[in-house]
Length: 404
Length: 95
Image (cartoon, rainbow over all chains, first blue to last red; front, top):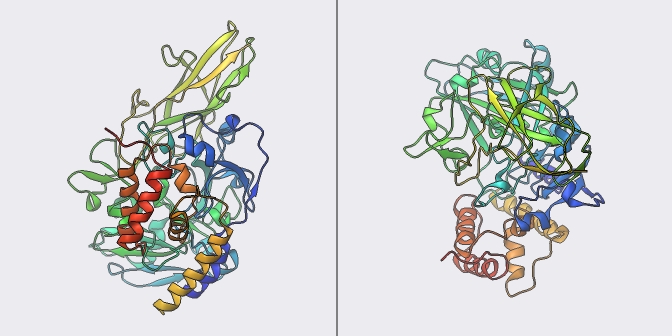
C-alpha cells in the first residue's frame, strides 16, 4: 500500500461510532474493572457491528459484552476490535490491496492478490480463538497500565484460506530462515512511531494450523477485523494475527523492534509454552505466545437474580490447542466443584461450550465459577500469576447471583 | 516527503482534536495534554488508567510514549504533562 493511500485512509480512522442507550452498566461491564475504566466505558455501535463496549475510540479498542459468549462461535458483527495505531485504511484503499511475499531468506518475491490467495492454493478451514494478549488486563491485581480490558477481547471464528506454509513454499524459504516477519496496512499517525510489525518463528509459521484467512465464519473479514486478509495463528495470542497483512518476509535475523522486544513480553518460564520462540527470548523475558487454559461463564451475568427452582450455567472454555478435557462449575466461589457437560467439539483451537444445571437451590446468594482443564492436564490457576503487562489471567471468574 | 507526512499528520491530528469528545479536568496545562496526547490517541486512555496510576507510573507512561512510541514531546512539555496528570488523574503516591 502506498503512503498516500494510508493518509487518505486516515480519515476513516476516526471511526464513526454511535452511542447506545444502556440502562444499567452493571449488566455489561465487569465490576472488577478500575473505577476510571468504568466511568469511561460506553456501549457503542461501530459501522457493521452490533453494540460493543468502547474502551477507547481512537485507535479503536472495543470488546464484546459477556453475553456474546453464550455461543461457541462469535458472529463477525460481535467480534472485538483492537488497534495499536490510528492509521487504519478505509475499505476503498483496501480494495487495491496486495500481499508481498519474499525476504532475504526467500528464493524469490511474489505479489499476491485476494483472488490468488483464494484460488491459487489449497483452502484450509480452522475454528480458532482469537484472544488479545491483554484480555482481562483490567482485572489484574494490582492494576497495570494499558487498555483495561474486561473479559471480551476475544472471539472464536471459523477462518478459511491458504496455509502460510504453502504460500511460503512458492517463494522458496531457504534453510537459513529463522523468522517470518509480518506487516499490515494499518500504521502510525506520526512517522516517528514504530509501525506495527511482528514476527513468527519458522516452527510455528510452518505449522499445519497457521493460515492466511480471507474469510471469517463464511463471510468477508470485517474492515476492523483485518479485511481483506489476516494471518491466523491458532493457539497463540492475537498480537501475531496480523490484520490487513501486506507483507510476509522470510528472514535470517530476529525482528528487532518495539513490538517484539519491548511490548508483548512475559517473565521467562512463567507460563506453559509448546512452541518456543528462542530467537526473541532474553535472560528475563520471553515473547508472549501460547494461550493459557481458560473458561468464561457467559450466563448468568454477575449481580443478577436467578430462579431458586434452578437455572443453567453456560459458557465457553479454550486453551492453546491441546483441547478441553473437563470443565467444572462451583456455586460456592470455588469451595466445591461439579463437572459440567461439554458441548460439541469444534476442534482443539476453538471455544468448547459447556452447560451445567444447578437443580433446585435454597434462596440466597451464590458465587458461580467455572474451571477448565485441558488434555495436557493443566487447570486454571487459583491465584493470579501477576506479570507487569497483565497477561494470561486465567483465575476463575466469580459471578455473584441471588437465587429467589 | 517527511515534512509533508508530518504536516499531513498534524493536520489530521488537529481535526481529530476538534472531534475529541473527552473533556479533561480544567487546570493549567490541560490544553497541552490534550494537544500532545490526542495527536496519536483519544484521551479516553487518561481516565481509563486514572484510578491506579501513581505520579511515578504516569511519568513512566509519558517516557514510554516518548521513547517507545516516538512521541515528539520535548522535556518541558513532558514535565507539564506529568505534572497535570499527577495532579488531576493519579492515584496517591505509594509510600
